Every structure is written in structure tokens, then in C-alpha cells.
Picture 1 (cartoon, helix red, strand yellow):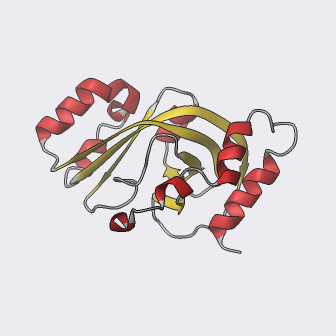
Picture 2: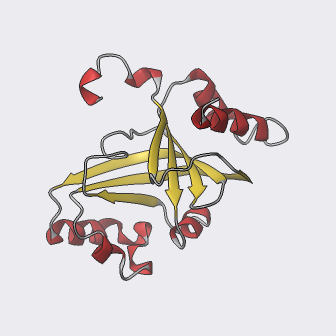
Length: 177
């Protein structure tokens, strides 16, 4: 069994007991395959900010046009994994914003409008390390649910993975592959 399929199966088993009602919406969307499923890997201190509700918008910067850029839609589901550890939470995607051809002015506008929700100021080197980026995705974190951590066998260093494309996003979208 592929690690992506095992992740889904393990999640369903973990929340199938006493937490079933709390995760009912997620279980329905996963089982009906309505929306895209994603896996996002987080480093500290950003993971803690997400789990405590301080960080309510996730940002992903990249040099190349890779996930999550233009691959995340409102309503999608994102599994949260701690770097070098297990899965610990899940959230639904709210609003999504994409930016290309990033310039200092773009960063200033994004920081002015979303800065507090992004927590970029918690790591003074963050934007310097990402200064060569050309693509920016801003993903609003809605309905965050934390669950008992469990390991998965993902071993590559990719920070964002599309686990499965939802059925609503597969018809007539060959151009997006």
C-alpha cells in the first residue's frame, strides 16, 4: 500500500472512535473524494503557531511553480505533519491567494495585509531565506482539528504534497497537469 493511501486509512481509523463526530465533515469529504487532499510539512516555530491558532494563514514560497501553487482550492483538506515526526492535525482551506513575479513591493503589501496572520515576523531570517522565490501561495487555515499524532512513511523532503485530486477537480482540467 502506498504511503498516501495508508495515511488516509490510518486517519480514518484514528478518528473512527470517540472523535468521529468532531471529524465527521472531514471523513465525509475524504470518503466521497469531493476535494483535493494535501499534506503540508511544518517546521517550528510555525507548526506551534498553527496548532495554537496564532497563525491562521499558511504561506508557501518557491522558486519553481510547484505545489501548492495553483493546486489548492477553497474547501480542500490539508493534513499537517511536523517535520521529522508524524501527522498531528487537519484543516480545511479557506481563501487562497497566489502571487508571481515577486518583488519587494509584493512582500510589503502581503506583510501589511496578512503579516500578523502569517507570523513572518517570528523568524527575522525567513524572508531573506526566501528572497529568490518567484511564486507565493497564501492559504487560509479554517476548521483546524488536532488529533493523536501518527507516523507515515513519507521519506522525501518535499514540503507540500498533493495526496489525491478530488473528483470535482478532475473533469476537463488536463491543462493543469
